[in-house]
Every structure is written in structure tokens, then in C-alpha cells.
Length: 224
Image (cartoon, rainbow, N blue to C red; front, side, top):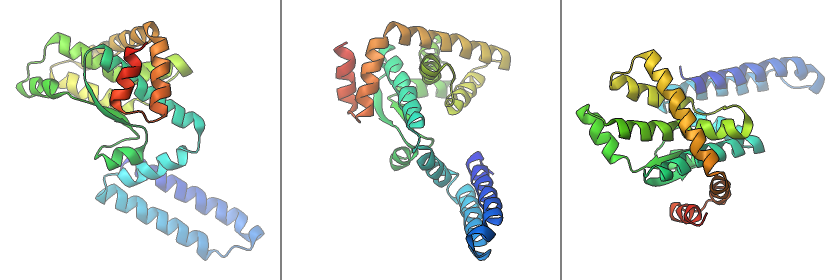
């Protein structure tokens, strides 16, 4: 079962527990929390096996979206990816800032920046990726974590980025220790690029927060 489904199960248990404790005080029929819990568990099961966790991700992201900090973290995380990709010459094809937006565009997760990465895919398919290409993309994948760390001194997002990067490094022959070292190096590279272009980064955050188009975001970068 996916982590999202497990989160829904946890919510179900919490609802059932609180209902049992508060039900007598509120004159709440035991049937109501039982139905609510059964429904949530059913949704979690259906989402896990039929939707690959996408429905639960959207629901949990919607709940988290009531937090201003959560929305700001996602925005700053994705702006980090966007800016570093642009600085390293990797074309940005689009971006999303919520699980709902991502789902509508056929993506997974809570949001993301899409790259025109045909050249990377082509090299990975042949099993011969250049060191320069690998460094560029590794730095871009770590840029979201770098941005969060610079702003908040920690990172809550980035698990998918690390997982994707780890898979690619393993596919080209990196041992676990070498992969971890590579990720740390690229994280440092991403932090350096963001720090050197911090004014531009803040302008990009503002533009993306207003849902500017990719072309408009690139124009904002060019003007700084």
C-alpha cells in the first residue's frame, strides 16, 4: 500500500478515535463515525489499487493547501528547479504547483517543473550519458531541496527528486555510496547557483506565485 493510502488510513483511525471520545458529549450516533471511517478506508483501498495513490495525494495536498507555509514551500521548491534548469541551459516546458494541477497534466506528485529532456532520455536509453549532462541534471534535481534549505534551513519536499536521481545514478553504474556523494555535491552546486542569483530567484518566485506562463517567467529571469 502506498504512503498516501497509509496516511488516509491514519486519518480514518484518528476520526474513529475522536468520534468515540466526543460522540457521547455531542449526542453523535455511533453509526456516523463508523460510516465515515468505512468510507475513508474504502477510498484508501480504491485509490491504492486503482488510481496508484493519485486520488489520495490530491486529497492530502488539498488539506495541506490550507497552510500558507505549505503552499509557499512548494512554490519556492519548484522555483529552485526552474531557475537552476534555466541557468544550466535545460529548457523548461511547464510547471505545476499542486497535486490537482499535476494530475490534470498527467503528472504525479504535488507539483513539479517539466523539462524538455529528450537529449537526456536519448542518452539514458543508449546507456552512455556524458559527465556534463549528468552533472547538469543532477544539479537541477537537487535544486528544489537546495531552495527550501536556503529559505527554511530544512527541506520537507524532494523525496521524489532524490528517488529519481538515485535510480538514474544506479542505472549508469553508481554504487550507493558514490550516489550519495554525487547528490551532496550537486546539492552544493545548486545552492551556490541560487545564492549567486538570489534576486532573480525571488523575482521568479513572485512570478510563479501569480501563475505566470513559462515564457513570462523566462522574461522575468532575463530582466534581472
